[in-house]
Length: 117
Image 1 (cartoon, one colour):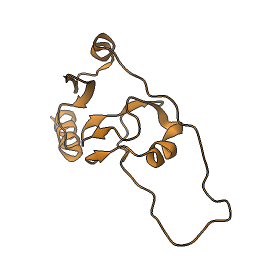
Image 2 (cartoon, helix red, strand yellow):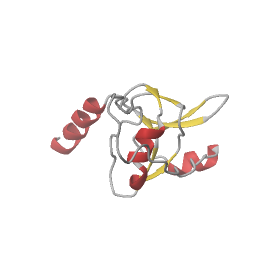
Image 3 (cartoon, one colour):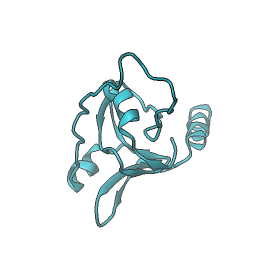
Image 4 (cartoon, one colour):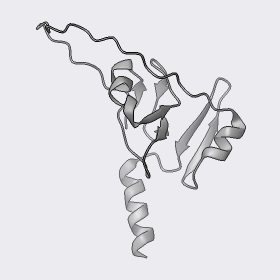
């Protein structure tokens, strides 16, 4: 959804949605596929969301939860996993999966144009 670093706070809130290909502090950008969804279709999620810091203390204090380990894909696994609207980005340090069209609104417009025409 946005550019930045992945936060453990955001991953913890999205933990029930599926498996992730990224971990905390990994750099991400809009249009990058960060995980596999349990349901059919794509979900646009903000994995860079941070916890708002306030001066008020909670009676439950901080909750410590364990995140699922990230799923590292090999080049062959990434090539098998992608959909027709996705690409595999090969860098010296990692393999990333991204959408062909990085902007979410442009993807929606293109999908409507295909179904309407």
